[in-house]
Amino acid sequence: MERVALVGFGIAGASLAATAPEGIELVVYDVAGPRCSSRVATGLVNPIVLKRRRVVWRAVEALKVALRTYPSELHSSGPIYEVLQTVQELNDWQALSDHPALGEFLGEVTPVPQGIHGVGLGKVRGSFRLNVIGFIEHTRAQVEVWNEQVNEIEANAGGSWTINGQERFDRVILAEGYQARWAEHFWGPLGFARTWGQGLHVHLTAEPGVMLHRSHFLIPEPNGSYQLGASFGWGIDHGDQDPPRALADQTEELLNSARDWVDGRIEVQGQWTGIRPNTLDRRPRWGWHPEHATLGMLNGLGSRGTLHAPLLAQELWAAR
Ligand SMILES: Cc1cc2nc3c(=O)[nH]c(=O)nc-3n(C[C@H](O)[C@H](O)[C@H](O)COP(=O)(O)OP(=O)(O)OC[C@H]3O[C@@H](n4cnc5c(N)ncnc54)[C@H](O)[C@@H]3O)c2cc1C
Image (cartoon, rainbow, N blue to C red; front, side):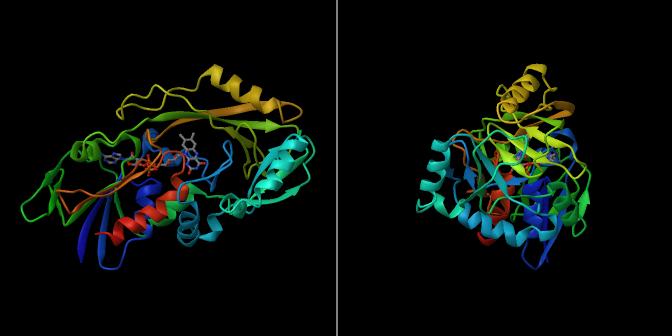
């Protein structure tokens, strides 16, 4: 049995646990708290960059592994729909459905529900919403999790590791999210361009009942309310900070952009913020350390953690 320490149990850590091969004893160190991005993520698994009408990096293979890894009872029942507001947009959507790469994900156009301004809804094939916390909890039940901060990682002769001066492991995998203290300690700067996001819980007079995207996402919740968001903010210079407090101007911006396509009253019931582990080149960081073969990392999942985490977790294990 190989004893492996996993530092961090957001979507990256949980995916590593869910895809771990036989013969591994996994011990997880995770403090969760406000710095865990996965606990505030909406959980959309979306193979398309809707604003740019582009397929996401490695979307086809990532989606296949995500579907195998996430239990189907934790998926939303329906896909995301893009709100098409003009006949031109509708024609473009239909024309792009013949595109060799994008076409696979651009589904049929369906009528717009009451209360939404548009000429049609374009279905994003393959998209769904994952209950992220549900997945983390489901996976947590299968591994040993210690609610302990990792403050010390020491390399021993022979390739093993000691964590916090006590526990010995054959391998260590870092899945720390935007904080990335240990990943940057061993690898050096990872090229983060962290962003923060603000989302709103809203009550609507119009109730579309499906997941919509236009300027932002509008997502129905099981309790009848909706999530609207999330915004993008910069100015997160290092990993050692908590998400900023919600800002009134971000709230206003989200509401104003929604008013372009949602009729009726939009009543804010709550708001939340989180930090995304984005990188400058928009690529994740994963692999084994060039000098310490028993030290691995999965990070830099940016805004697409739910889509990419299972594929990259699987690849990390395969490369060990
Ligand atoms: C508002 C918002 C909405 C989003 N919506 C979506 C979405 O719809 N779809 C999507 O795919 N992505 C979304 N994202 C992005 C998504 O949240 C991230 O891609 C993903 O959560 C990153 O997961 P992770 O496991 O790498 O990091 P995290 O989820 O942050 O997990 C890292 C964990 O490691 C722990 N940790 C770190 N260092 C230590 C240490 N030294 N000792 C012990 N524990 C430690 C942390 O406390 C944390 O619990 C959203 C992000 C935000 C902010």
